[in-house]
Amino acid sequence: MSEFDVTDMVEAASEGETPVPVVAVVGRPNVGKSSLVNRIIGRREAVVEDVPGVTRDRVAYDAEWQDIPFTLVDTGGWETSVSGLAAMVARQAEYAAQAADVVLFVVDATVGITDAAVTRVLRRARKPVVLAANKVDGRMQEADALELWNLGVGEPYPISALHGRGTGDMLDAVVEAFPEKPEPVIDPVEEEGPPRIALLGRPNVGKSSLLNRVADEERVVVDSVAGTTRDSVDELIELGGQTWKFIDTAGIRRRYRALQGADYYATMRTGQALERAEVAVVLMDVSEPLAEQDIRVVEQVVESGRGLVLAFNKWDTLDEERRYYLEKEIDRQLSRVSWAPRVNVSARTGRHMEKLVPALETSLAGWNQRIPTGQLNNWVKDQVASTPPPARGGKQPKILFATQADARPPHFILFTTGFLEDNYRRFIERRLREDFGFEGSPVHISMRIREKKNTAGTPQNRASKGSSRNDGKARGGRR
Image 1: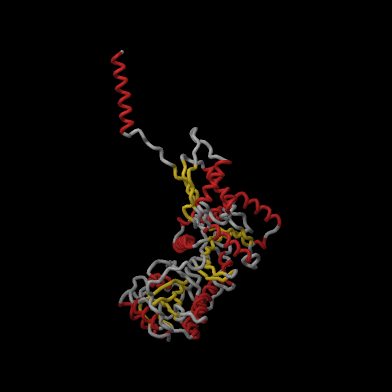
Image 2: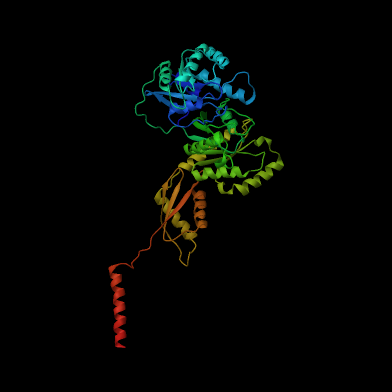
């Protein structure tokens, strides 16, 4: 999945580049927008559940029809005359419609005309509108779709997002409405792109607030209710003279296997976002004691092999007493990741946000770092000479050779004559970090134990054993 901010497309057009058209999928809650998005992109990417209000942020996906590429933007339910969280979700949908080249207006044909207020807003936007009359699963429902002519936004296309019925004609109309026809997709080359940074943490620690702060705009919906974010939202952001792709994610909950519906799939999307990222920023709310969930999120990042930055949010709320106990909690519960860069920030006020980029750069550098094989083996020789491996079963193992098998994250293989105890491997890792850095990245150390040569089955050995037995019988006969 490749995701972009809609405004980036508009900026590209203003700079003279050939932009990929942007299609915003809008409509009232629970009309099937995310189901239609999944149908168009050909995979279950957007979170879908049979209750209103599942999608809340603008989430964009690469799509194409008849080899014509475009960016598809899923939005939350658009309702007028609402307040609170619903109003913020509606505002995100309106932003998407204003920035798009074509608006795909999804209506539930089985309900009838309940979208007049949204239609008035779309008319004022003066954008091409393609009207999708969803949930038309057969000819019996097509008459319901005809009533939607009265909305005054053009021909309603009867479709079924669930079964795919009629979506081809609808997409033909969408492509026809593009202001300029882009070139067909021909064997695109995958590019590395900007560094991908996943924002992780338990629910309601400030991930979306941090993304809005670094983006310097209200990019995602923020609310005090835990679990507001459900889709993983990508945002290209210029920071420190470099472009980064930040991925806001749903909060990782304690027992995700017991979750149901949208919360379950949102947690699954968070795991996928981590797999796509290079560095994870784990946010923790310092106004509360570090929780088991905080530690589990950090462990998940380490196990995934991604770079790690620890961000302690709401730092401006700390008093001296809480700061003292927080340092004790960090020393006790996060000692395993003492190598991770740490930033103390406030997403609300922007305090110390300038320290985030250096921490990200440090983590990326450690994640990509390599040691030449010759230098590594000389270093290992010195370590073994000063602190040899402990004996095991009366025999002391030797390290014959060492190599860095991979980076991203760094992975070292030690070729040995015997098993190295966990304590000794941790000693090697600690000394690697002291001498070479690898700050902000997990380091993996594995062993390859040389197999002992089995000479028991060789012809010469068998002959020797047979000769001994024969000699014994002959001696016995003489006695």
